[in-house]
Length: 321
Ligand SMILES: NC(=O)c1ccc[n+]([C@@H]2O[C@H](COP(=O)([O-])OP(=O)(O)OC[C@H]3O[C@@H](n4cnc5c(N)ncnc54)[C@H](OP(=O)(O)O)[C@@H]3O)[C@@H](O)[C@H]2O)c1
Image (cartoon, rainbow, N blue to C red):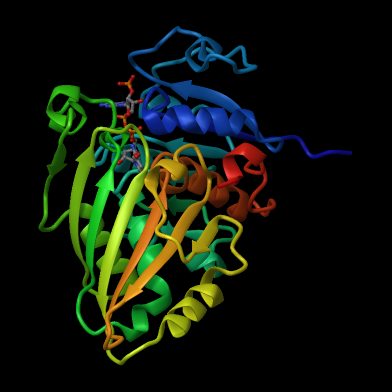
């Protein structure tokens, strides 16, 4: 006898992340979308919005109080920063697993910080899961294998496609501003700078930019090492950390962001060392909407519910590089 699928409710379903989540949930043999909440798309068909989905659901505009009355195994909040905490507070009665894609619980020790490749040992059985930020995932994957050998705060130069700014119109997703351009913003105190410093227990410096392409993050991290290392030492540290990780590819080549789009996997590597072996540059690329958001949320649901971590993510096209 096969177990019935876990039911998932999605709030913020119209957004870029919500859309990816509906697609991944639809392809997952162990999950079933129970509701998709959007104020703007209320009444419209989910299949029509996604183009090719096999579902009869229609979008509903559900307030937090109404969600409490809608039993599901998992409720995913893909809401803007600052809005999810109120929903989570009302839904947090122990009757469902809550996955928050926003930054609202990333500094809260009562929530599990769901970056499986670094914190998998604490992943099972959590009912409150805070999904990491997209740039923050790229920074942590690039830094973590050498975090204990770093002397000074690493400098992280990040460039994101404009889907990282969400659908609400702003300078960061304005085609006219971005055309043939690169937009730097918030070079001090960005949420993801604080998030990575908090999670790794090490200060980092982060310089975010947004570019004209739609999806993907290119992260260039410069670290000063406490003692000299060789290229072989560095490669071995990353091999040890990620050699068995199906969603992280390590490479000697400089990874390029275009190859990350539409893929579940992040790529880390392209290491360059100074002659004295103390200045190291590492590159990371990933799809902000997948490994930076929806893919990671599915890993987290699978892990906390005791399913195979990559269940629903084994689509060959999205795994290849
Ligand atoms: N985009 C990324 O690359 C990325 C990566 C990692 C994490 N995240 C995080 O994931 C979350 C969603 O990001 P996104 O890019 O998908 O954002 P988005 O495209 O702007 O979508 C936001 C969603 O929230 C809903 N919403 C907005 N204001 C609302 C309100 N006052 N009450 C109820 N619903 C509201 C919107 O739907 P309606 O207006 O139709 O209700 C929409 O579905 C954010 O917290 C973001 O920081 C984003």
